[in-house]
Image 1 (cartoon, one colour):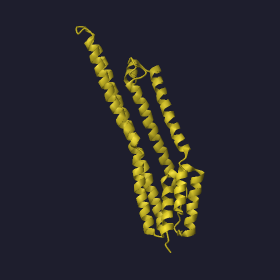
Image 2 (cartoon, rainbow, N blue to C red):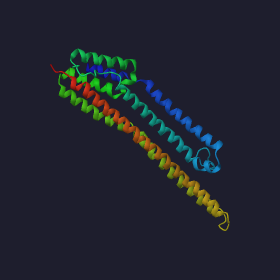
Image 3 (cartoon, rainbow, N blue to C red):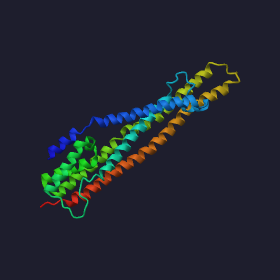
Length: 268
């Protein structure tokens, strides 16, 4: 049974899951490009300077536009994590285990439980990536091998620790995006200040319009950092909310498995 469980989990690396995630990323990237085009077509020059750095000679390849694209990628990653967490929570209501107060799980009931999860994974391969089906399969396989409730509880606890680490790893790319956006903002500010100083060195210092033009260019330079910090604030807020939701679902999966599987096992 342990080998069958491993086979089921291996076969369930469904290409449809990655294709769905790729589709979400592409939708968000297209939305970012559409947002940039809409701002450029409808907003005032001041708004375009703040959000897009529209007057830059390299338009449309500006630091702000790159930041919007990366922001869209981070938002797409968070959406994927949220949808996965919702799918994980749906497993808690799928009826994988008996939830009444009388059922005791022995050999026949365990085989039926295992077969039910195996069939569910076969029908929907994405389920093999979810915590609860994997957890139940591991515990059932362990109990069928050792006939020990204590060892089954130990494998459940070890699995929960591994899954918690797995959840944390899934946010590595989001954490990088949250770091990269402010870094780009600072880079944009440095570039803007450098260009403003270069401009000042090429004009007559007695020109009365110099101070006005220099101040304007420096203002655009600092807009990049301001926009980057605002983007990071939004992403970090939703990162913490969604990660907490996903960890809470994992905790609920462990409690569900403890109440309806571990506590019902019979060693006789």
